[in-house]
Length: 66
Image (cartoon, rainbow, N blue to C red):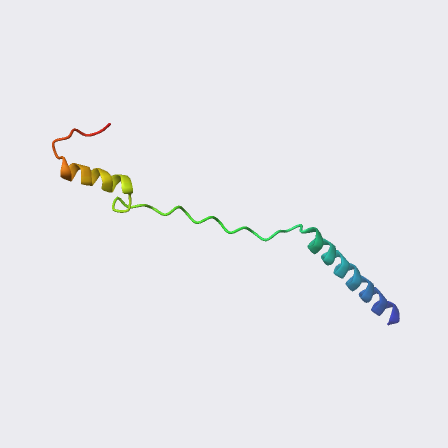
């Protein structure tokens, strides 16, 4: 009985130290969170669109810029 208890304690100690070594080495780092997708900008938020719209309203006879 004493020999069985000694074997169980030795296995537990070996498992404990193995886990501690793996944790300290950082074998399995935590997964990184994915970067959120860029925010979609609607035409009413786009400064270039608004500037061009204002220009078209003030000067409707001007040709379209390339």
